[in-house]
Image 1 (cartoon, rainbow over the protein chains, first blue to last red):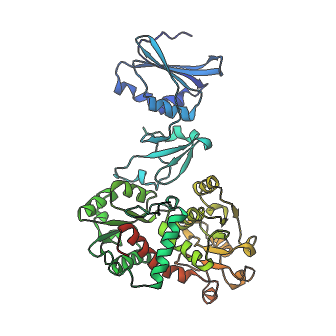
Image 2 (image 1 turned 30 degrees about the horizontal axis):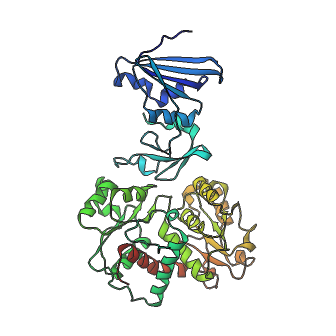
Image 3 (image 1 turned 90 degrees about the vertical axis):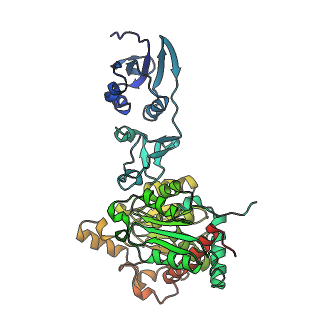
Length: 154
Length: 311
């Protein structure tokens, strides 16, 4: 299966097999055309991988994923690697689990102040790396890394 | 070592307070109990704003009397129905409004968890959390700890049973955080559905606190130094038959207490609704009215330290 090389954009590699849809949801790729009308996306699923046996790959033409977004992906799938392409040149980026995540993840606790109507408050979580979980800065609710895809804000 | 300083400090969570600061507050409260008039008027001319987004009589009155005895002017509301909140005003806007009126400190009760943390980030003025949803009620826990500290002369080495609705009540979490500063052993006594929240348990584990969970009091009764009773709230157990069954397991009366240490102290943040029999009141075990009375000197000492009043 061939997908042509891209001149500008991002390749998200080493996604566990059949998990590319989760990555697409976290990155809100369905909204990408609003940000870059000419961007296009190729999703490869269950391709052979030396490292993982089988993997998914996402190629995004003409769009660079923010490093902070890549870091959120790394919470969920630690094997993920990112390649940024600039004028055919490849730059590797190793995502890091961030110490805090602000504004991207919704707190599942309905009575958390971050879910209050019209309060100008931005959600904020500290990462508890050893426990593979996040803790809400405001209400202390703890969520597992695996729950993050369902809680990423649209 | 520098003395712990509370000047202009927020009181959002008891996790933010170490034993040095807590014991300084206890010492100041004790000094005030010995000389009750010593801080009268110490904060004259300053303004305390009490914003109670949930109706409250007892905590509101306690802060109001404490503030007024210190000479503070008091503004705000004890019931959101009597404020612009009933028209939909946000916490953020309410704080900014009263900040403009010259507030020197805020005391806030709110139904949403984390409201006090958000309030403290909204204003430079010190914020005291008087209860934020089911998350925390740090000044109540300071009063609970102060009551134990006075009764035993120490907090290290005590085995404290915290019983009742530990999942939806705010005082057990603050009390647990406070006790994590001491070599105390915690025992959470509750039905599974109302057991201590995971974030509290995980904090205690990280701090290396010895704790256990029990479904009934009987199994640990004779080992406890303190029994901290909270109410099982009816609305948390939808099945009325199940509620009646569970409620009975966590009721404390003289028959229950007869198997416990003679030196046991029984605490309750009050109000009580049947879970603690009035026949216990006249025994030496009962500490809850002394606990309630300690609220005034402790909150006065705290306000005075935060607002830098003369001593």
